[in-house]
Length: 181
Image (cartoon, rainbow, N blue to C red; front, side, top):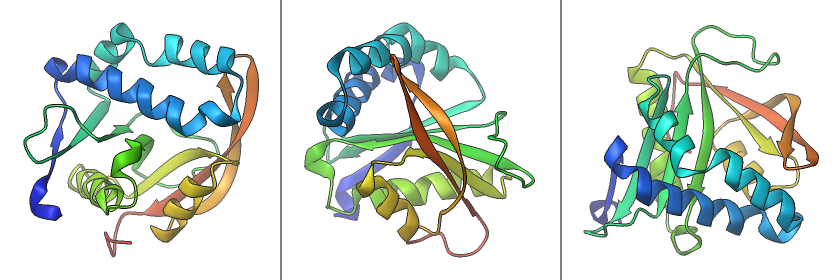
């Protein structure tokens, strides 16, 4: 599988395919457990084409896109962000893994592990010492994945999904050491 998977840094030219994937994967991940109006509000506010263009242009963000074979549509993506840290993250040189999503057809094929490995390699090569993230307390699949990668819960914060204030767990792990699950 690894020879068929390509992971690369996204550019402004990738905005249109990224917005399609971002909305699709967000709705697939959270749609069944949340009110559609709240999902719609989040997608409209956080995953619009204009918003993603702004994020892609912001040097604090790095998006990684994952493709299988010669496909033009990515099957996964991650967003790393520097410059903002949750209060529970008490370490030097942190980077946030703000998003990591896969298309349903890519889950369970080792692609998420490849994408996480690339995120950790990018973070390490950029001089960061810790990766942190927020994950919805009810997202059991993601919690299990992050724990396998050595992330530990260090706190919590509120994630606003439309009109719904949800509890996210703050997890972090050092980058030094093993970069595999």
